Image 1 (spheres, rainbow, N blue to C red):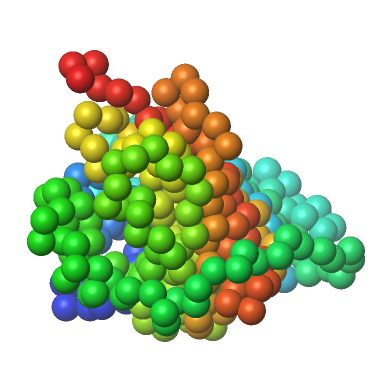
Image 2: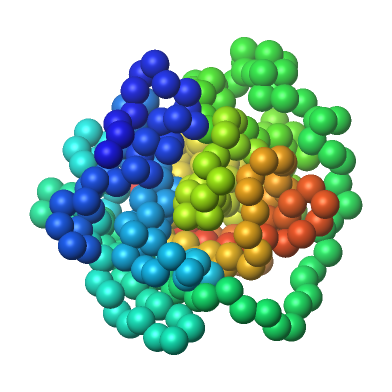
Length: 294
């Protein structure tokens, strides 16, 4: 097991957090990077839980879907224990249930299904026609152009070095308080090399899948997750892995929110390679609640 380091790159630190320590059969321990977060990033817990589950299945079976629930905020200062239950090993599929534990309580639970590689029917939705990432502003350019006058929460988010770079196709959602259509397209890519190992590639994909989804459900209401008058948190997360991808280039993350009600917002996402291959689909419901005193 390796540990995140202040001298390492963000991607090296992410890969270190995915290198779980095996404590006992079906029992693993993971740590969090010390980057000043008040709670553990949900994508990290999904990715670590997936890594724990992958350590318990045969090498010829790969993740095809996961369904997760966030129950308590994770504490970044203490390790997370991942307990894997081997529900079933069939001829083609294997099913695992994973519970993440801190301070004696479950903070997260996930079911994951793995499958041997098989051929079969094949179709997919087309990739949207959007500008290529090279024509868009880089994160450094975004910081220079907009961060000086941005609220502190937004400035801190963008200034943090991350293992995933994002380039929004449109910046309107970030600078406008108008009520906009709850859709967005974002180019994302790994900043640094991801091992040529499908288990790590799936885990990094799961990690980045939790980025920006909650924001999309708030665009229809003229606000963002950085609004201090709103309480936001991921409630659940589902992901389907359609086709393998080595994460060597930009991916287009398309998102839309079909509904918000009952203080919850639902967002759907699709991840495409640059040449239009649909590699994964996501759905997430999050808490988007107006604070009582506002």
